[in-house]
Length: 262
Image (tube, rainbow, N blue to C red; front, side, top):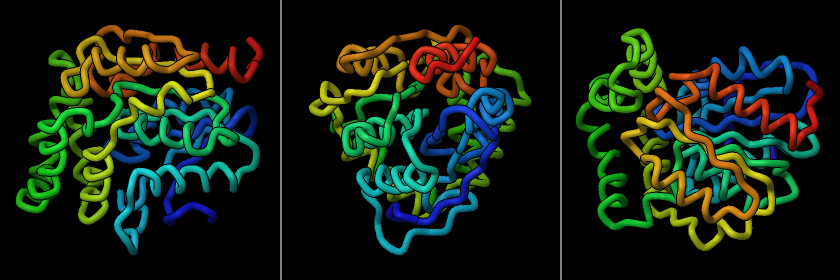
């Protein structure tokens, strides 16, 4: 492949525009099961395990945000043309860097429960960098059990909480997670957001307790061609907690940007 690192992907759908899905820092392609199942009727859906996550091999060298974006660019080039890129949280930061760095490959951007990066605030950056040490000390299972429940709303079904925790426990490991955390800690996209030419959709769960609604509003306010949507009754993982509502907004966006017929 032409990207920086090798990755495992899950794919569904045989026609329509390419929809590339980039998961959050504590997850994997499993996070996009609802999108692979439903949106594949309208698009070719590809969800990656980021380098060093889940079934993807560990990188040979430390990866930066640019490297993650370049790896995603390689997946698009392999499939020809351009992609609509859906990123959740950390995946949204990668998607936006990808759109700024490789504009010819990005037809549109869909950013969910994300932010301009943790590098916008020293305390947030320090907290992000500390996560790798926490993972090393606790191990993946205890790390996931400590973090997973906060990623959904307080009223989320027990089954969803278990699925989120299990996905994280099966996905995160060192050194990949440390590279991801450093890429997020050093990221401050505020200067490049106005240059993102692709049309964008910014979504956020109304009960997001991780990045929060204000961070999503900051993205939407800085992107030149954007729509902003609040997903009701959803926490940080809106695409998993309210997949019906989330997918409906994504499909509406694709109908406009990719001219998918009704």
